[in-house]
Length: 126
Image (cartoon, rainbow, N blue to C red; front, side, top):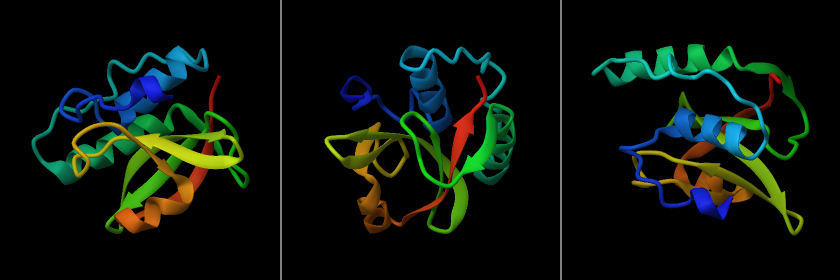
């Protein structure tokens, strides 16, 4: 996953990054050209983005598995997505957000320090 760290947020938002990883690492080739809504309104944009991304997810899973979607809240707003992976018995999330400037890997247990709460883990449709 290290190859995805440092991609500028202005070039790739959290949904774009998650689907790129699904395609390149996990072989799930989604047609996501329509996902990125065109809106200057941040709230409208995040609502449309979530709705579109849910089209690619199946059910919520209790225990995360490598490559699953991590749905998150930033500052209380359900508007964020990442990719879960485990390495050397440590759980991580690859994600990107405007507040970080580029894509980053955080330990799952450290997300709260950045005002990010995990809402749930989701299996991707295949």
